[in-house]
Length: 105
Image (cartoon, rainbow, N blue to C red):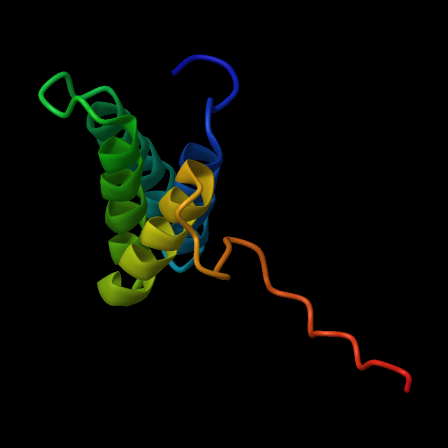
């Protein structure tokens, strides 16, 4: 994982870990960030999980757990993002939906 993160999920997971570390004292902050980032790398590079989507979802759930975000919310977000990417979305998307325009009759 040297260099830039390769996916949106990885970037989001790293961002969540950084946010979680902000709550820690200065002494512990760097140690925890390195530890959690290493675990994130292990999750994303897990050879036993063949699906990239599952690895991304596990990484997001791991990072969300560190920040205190309810796992159900993170899981729903990961599911919606996967459905959108695979073309199975039913009006849901990873981005916030825009309100429908009112017709001018």
